[in-house]
Amino acid sequence: MPIHILGTGSYAPEKVLTNHDLEKMVETNDEWITTRTGIRQRHIAADHEATSDLATHAARMALEASGLAADDLDLIFVATCTPDMAFPSTATLVQENIGAQNAIAMDLSAACTGFVYGLEVARNMLECGRYKTALVIGAEKMSSIVNWEDRGTCILFGDGAGAVVMSSEAGGQGGIGPCNLGSNGALGELLMVPAGGSRRPVDAQVLIERSNTICMAGQEVFKHAVTNMTQTAKHLLAEAGWDPSELNLVIPHQANKRILEAIRIRVGVPKNNVYVNVDKYGNTSAASIGIALDEAVRSGRLHPGDKVMLLAFGAGFTWGGMLLEWRTPES
Ligand code: COA
Image: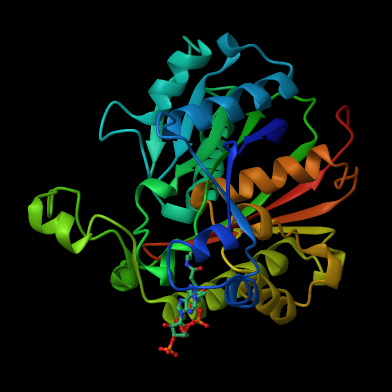
């Protein structure tokens, strides 16, 4: 049973934090950040905005684009590593906000790979035939877990949300194809938020150490991101029997422009066929692919017949990719 994407949506908070703004906060400069990462600015949520608020904006846009009503939704998944709170889930908060009373809702935790994991879980549940429609959202308020005194990490991250509505019924534009996912818990310590969970709840010492914020071995993460996303891309191309030159658009997790270029060269994707918006948003973790996909759709970048690859990598480590074939809605 083919599963389709019916509509996409995205949201970035109003406040923009530029590299020049960061120069006033930590010992860094625009040239260093731009050269090493490709990031020029990131969006930062207001104090009163939580992840569910960002997710709700993206969800409403995706629903409107899909032509479905909130009542039509059977599943709502929110991929996030910055939930509003431990429970209730961010997905149930979104369910209430949009009035999707017939849906079941839950969160998924796979860090920056969460959106692709969410698409695959939803696809499989739709293929089973018991559910017909799903809303998958990647949403993050990364600014809430960033150490704003650590120049090695605070320059990288931003806030935002991206969403898709999927259906098992005909009519969608994005036909969902093969997916390949992986995890390796042995490397978890290279990218983590060490405290703030049940292992080490927040106490005075945690706040002094700031160990409830992101800790990262940047160069190690860089290497594993390139290796795992390259392998995933090659695996998916082999499975589909596609040549890399046939890929009209690769939409990778937006971590670092140099990571994206290294993957592009290793996989053999044509120069302008990798979607890059990390300059505008920074790394929005689980939100990044959804935001980029929505931008690509709304800017007319995708056409019937286009072959698209989503590629992700994140803490865990986790990684994954998915192929899409763009169609005219009726075909
Ligand atoms: N501004 C200026 N200098 C900085 C800096 C900043 N924001 N951050 C680090 N530096 C300094 C370091 O202190 C170091 O100085 P030293 O040589 O005097 O010790 C120097 O720049 C090089 O640091 P290094 O960490 O080796 O830089 P890098 O080229 O590896 O770039 C990252 C750092 C974080 C940009 C890069 O490793 C990266 O992007 N890694 C992947 C991170 C990622 O994508 N994580 C999420 C995955 S989902």
